Length: 135
Length: 202
Image (cartoon, rainbow over all chains, first blue to last red; front, side):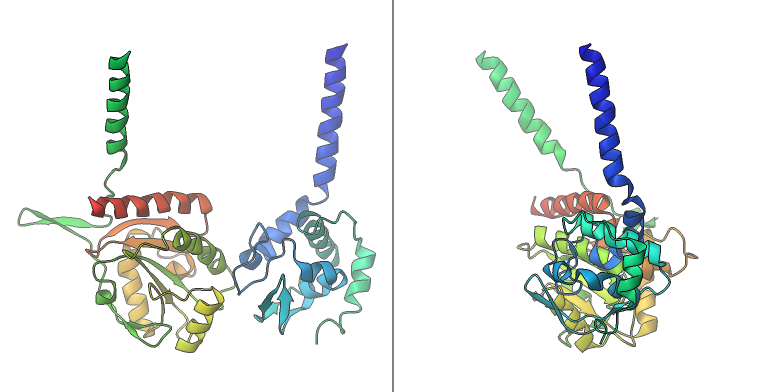
């Protein structure tokens, strides 16, 4: 009886773990491919050249801009966790809306401690309001 | 009981003293008049981020780590620099170790740009030279630095994109290298650097 309980418990645990990381698998692949060269796989950035993603106060207060930043890039001075950055980031206009959603969700979950899920419709909305962000 | 203790102490001393293995000298070698002659890195003349000339004599009596990069590199360079900073932090207080980062982008990477880059990396240390020079010369010297590391000369981008860190000793010999994008390989490389520095202290 005890053994049966243990098996059930293990199966449940595995399914919970696999479910909670499943949605971010593609996001991680995309992040590693497009973002990690500059922002590093662990999101730590590089000194004064590339800002950190991990625990970035800038991203926490610019959540709705993230899709636009990925699509159009970012130019000008920004302050992240008390440090100033001015290096231009090139955008990635070829990344599809659904893949932007994957990246945004991965970044939110992994680096910003936010489990709220952003869907493609919301990404579309964000992308249609980019003018204010990119100036 | 006392005897056993002595034996244990003796054994531990022996095993410790054998731990440091002498690093090999890498690259081509040939025997000339009964003497082994090893590959030496060629002469170079570059200009650093402060506008000062950099030649082999800049590193006289010093070992140094070489890498090729460019400041606007969007691919592997930042990852290599991240790892190189790790090496730098570890050996920060060792004056017997210098750093030579050679830019391959002679057009865009001016002295001012190199200075800006060093500042952004938070490097304000005379030991680390970010240099530029004449394009042909930079590429020619690279062949002698990366002599041991060029597996595939036909690979796209060539040496300037392979992200290696090369360890050169006081005698212009190449003693170790690693893939600067791979933290595990860089860990191994740091042990080699440590061994070289210990070897010289003996």
